[in-house]
Length: 107
Image 1 (tube, rainbow, N blue to C red):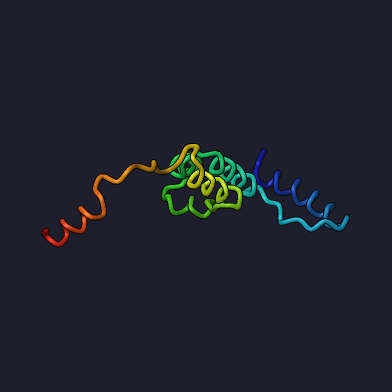
Image 2: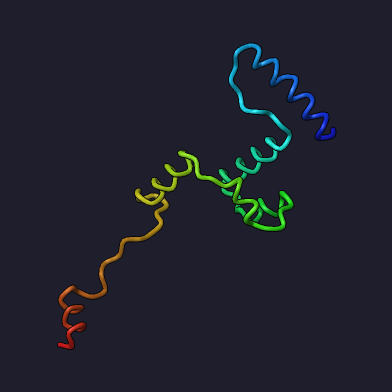
């Protein structure tokens, strides 16, 4: 199916919904491409791989698609803050504060 045909069908249903009082964004074939890229990004696919899949010659072009929604931000905070799958591991200090102070002042 051509992009023009998809555009024609989307315009038809977009107009029908608007006459029924729905407020929807403009529907266009590229919207499917953008939506699929965001689904891949939200599910952990790297931007460089998405860029290749979309056929972008420059990763900067793909960054237009990449934005962190509230859910992605919440997951990142949860990962950083709870003990499950943490970003860092809490370890005991190798040197005491006293030893560091003595070393810094050459004592």
